[in-house]
Structure formats: structure tokens, C-alpha cells
Image (tube, rainbow over all chains, first blue to last red; front, top):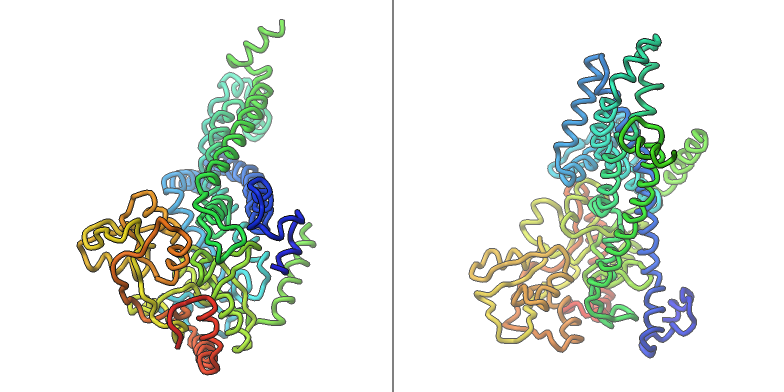
Length: 302
Length: 238
């Protein structure tokens, strides 16, 4: 108990057993353990903030590859889109992350410990030399956390990039043919047409599909837990589970329903904010475009 | 930016080469009194105290990691941590995949917890945590229907909300719950399952296994293990 006092925010929290409901709650919600939950909210937001642009880049690259006239690149782009879209997310997350981690360690093992004589696969065990570990066993916990977080971002980006690639591929083809013919008539090269005519105009066609993806990405963040990252769902489950007085100063029954209700509110609020932002973005992109949305904006102006 | 990354990487590399025998201890963190997360968000419990003492005796630097119970063995063999110290009973089935140190608890009886003492244990629905000796026991005896849950917490809720008639788990885990909840009572007789709890180690890591077994033996010899068992109420002493 003495030790715990140093972490208390409210001075009256030192004797939680004697407190009234509201005070008890304010103490309970400010334990160090609860701050892990609040931190995990930022982890999820950070994941979204990084994954969204990275998967958009992957998607753009994939779509460009799928449009390429060089058959190797074209085949690669189409294969990427087809395979990743076809594999269930959970299977991909389970398999890809472990395979990638072991592939990295295998590569490091062969470059860093060429003299190592033992086999890497010993029965069930995957054993590389200590120097080849990713990250090193001795590295501090935040390095381990950042590493698994980086793996998570990469995996999310590959998966959502494939879907984004398909959306962008479609959007590039939706740009009116007359625009491209005009560009040709002006003597633009294929590259110039792509960057100056197609790319600026395709976003309005891509946005409904991309906004769908964004919404799905928000909801997919609990998959983080599969990758060993303690996300908000993990902490909600852990904190909400019933606690006996022997092991905590804050015994309580099964509160998981309330924690999950809070998660529900968080996710709903977040999707609502996203909707508002996306609607505004759509209005901006539609401006001056030769589509019905653009026409009605023009009619409203005059 | 690139330079910054490189220097950080180089620093991390040199800093970590200094003390290379850090042992990563994998636990579940959801199984009091063996292991749980305390109010400060740290791993706590019988195995935390035991593990820290074992590392001290074996002169190892140890770090604690929590991992989901269902993937605790796969993550050990693929090298994400070096030991499992998570109230895991020594069984022949697990011993085929990983190795165990000497046991640090006596075989702990398993017990049924239910809403009333006269539930049908032989033919009813019994909850157990997946991949446990209790789940294997119910599945192998037949008669009763097994429902599995990924966490111990959910097996208790299943009894409370009527999804299962009773839960079968280590008595050590159930006792504090039965003591503090008047609606839950023990039912039927205790069953002896498993061969005591030990630390799980990769089969290729026999050196580490020997070190920890020796440390466990030395704690058995000087009575400090018994003191911990009494303190955390982990069944019978040695």
C-alpha cells in the first residue's frame, strides 16, 4: 500500500475500501493500470494515422503496376491484388507476421553468424544465434513493442493496400475517355496524361471506395491483439474482468459490459467524425468536376 | 532523418551487446494467484515472485512478457520469449512439444465451481479454459459436454450466466473466487490432474532448463519455495 501511494493522483485514494461510489470510481479510473488503457487508445490512433497513408501508397503503387504495359510489373500488380484480397485477414495476420519475422531472423542469422553450426529448425524450435534475434533479447521493452508495432503497420498496409489498389485501379479507368483523348490530341505522352489528367481527376471516383476502406480499417484495429500488441480490446477485457479483493485494492464484479460499451461509443464517435470529414472532402473534390455532383454544385452557385 | 535512424540503430545494437543473457519470461497475466496484472499494470503473483528469485539464483537478467494463453507455446518455440511461467501443468502431451523444468508446485487438485452444489457434473455442460488439462480431461471422459473459453475469466462468467453448469479449473484459482462470491460454490469431488506446475523451456535450450531446475531445487532445499507457496496459497507444500 505504501508503495502504491506514490502513484496516486487524488490523495483520498490511499484507502479505496472506505470510499463512496463517486470517489471510488475516480480513484479506480486513475490507477496506473487504467493509464495503460488510455495509452492504448493513442496506440490505435497512431496505427490508423500511419497505416492510412502507407496503405494508400501501397494501393497507388499496386494500381500503377496493374496498369503497366510491362508484363512482369503488370503481373505482379494483379497478383498482389488478387492474392491479398482473397486470403482471410486473420489467416494473413497469423501467417504473414510470423513468416516475416522468421524470414528476417533467418537472413540476419546467415549474415551475422556464418560460423553457427547448429540447425535453425530443431524439431518444433526455431533457433537463431542471439545476435540475429529481431529485436535482440536484451533490447528494452519499448524496442520490442515498436518492432511488433512496425510489423503490424506493415501487415495492415499490405492488406488494405491491396483493396485500395483495386479501388484506385477502377477510379483511374473511370476518368472520362474524352479527357484522355483530348490529352492525346494535345500531344501529351502516356506519362504526362497519367500524372496531369488521370491522377488529379480520379480521386472523386476513388473516394467512396476509399472511405469504405477507412471505415473498415477503423474497425479492424482489434486485430492488433493477434499480433501481441495490447490494444484497447485487450485492456477492456483485462480491466473489466471480475477482480477479487485478495489481488487488488479495487475489487469488483464482471464489468466487461461497461468497458465494451465505452469501446462502442469510442468507435461510433470516431466513425461519425470520419464521415463528416469525408463528406467535406468529397464536396471539395467534386468541385468543378464533370459529374452530377459537380453539376449540382454549379447550379447552386449561379 | 536517415542518419538519426542509423545512429539510433547502432546505439541500440551496442547497448544490447553488453549484457546478452536477458531471459524473457512469458506469462499469461490473467490467472491469480499464479500470475495477474496488478493495479500498477505490472505482472504480479506467485510466479512473479518465484521467477524473480529464480533469476537471481541463476544469475540471469529477466524481463516479463504477457502473452495470450492459446498462443503461449507457439510463441515460445518460435523464440519470442525464452520461458513459459504461467501456471502450466507438466503433461506428457505438452512435453512432446516443449521441455519442462522440475516442478515448483505439488500436483494441484482441480475442482468444479457451480451455482449450486448438486449440479449434474457427469452429464451437464462444463466450462474450461482451452488448451488446459481440465479441458482435456472433460473431452476425454465423455458424458459431460465441454465448452471452451480463451481466458479463465470467461469460464466463470459462463457459469454465472447459465451458459455452463459448472467450471472445472485449478482449485488454487477457484478458491479465492469461491471465498468472495456467495453465489458460487464448489460441487462434486476434487480431481487430481497433471503432474505439478513447471516452467516451459524450448527443447533445444537444455542449458537454460538445467539452470532453472537447479534454482528451483535450491529453493526447495532452503524452504523459500514453501514460504512462497504458503504466502500465495498454492496448494500443498513440498
